[in-house]
Length: 341
Image 1 (tube, rainbow, N blue to C red):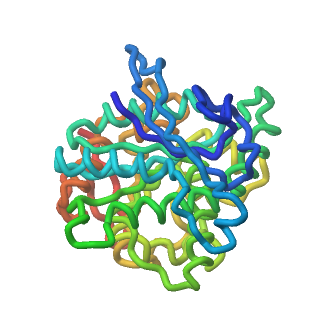
Image 2 (cartoon, one colour; image 1 turned 120 degrees about the vertical axis):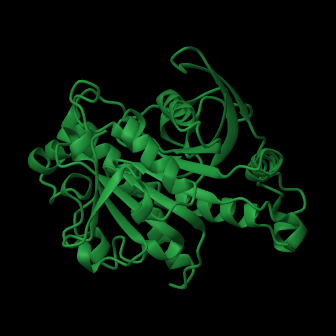
């Protein structure tokens, strides 16, 4: 199974990497490497990388006259492969941003699991994997990963803009005719905040719609994030529709709230005031369908729960939110609640 990736992690070799570690690239926080992985194994736990070659230094003389013809951009090679796959198979692209305490191997593994889980709608999948230290000390690791997620925002924002711009094409004949979606899980939603603020700052506040759907699962974000300009208030402007899935029984986010001094989590009880959200934002309560047997901490329903899977596939197929059969609309709260089968 082919999974595309973009990462600002440290490569094990500068010239032709065969793996990536748990720290930032030595070339800087915004240094992005692109490639693909052939993921195999019954648990998607084996992979072989094809890292795109990268050459940004053209020499001082050429740089002074702005001659960049000698540059080799790894992103272009990977995006060309992705666009060709999308055109031939007539399928969309899903960009996935993982959460807390995830290694490079685990990022590829989880993206492959998601591609398999949502195979009812074949898509080209790309994972943006940011550094996670993987420490066994939970408090230290959480703080470190939160810092790393914030620091990775500029790289992620740049990568999203480059991908959306490339797949849209600069000429009509380049347009692939397919959509780009974005999925985040847990602290990946916090990384998205900083990516969004980076994009917003670079565009002078004039945001264009880069994405078709944004799907946020169990975001480890503050419950007032969509109310504040410096958080996610204008994020819906980047997509045609934004769907927020939450679970009040999410033990991982309850731990984040209680033990780490965070405000109430967006991915637990949902937004503080759903009635004030734009119409394109859909809040979906997953608590009624979660299972402790299947998902002990209530944090992994996005890749384990069959009702959630059906709901997402219906949404991506273009069904109006109010017509999706897996959910019930609660007009007094302006939210949806998933129904038990």
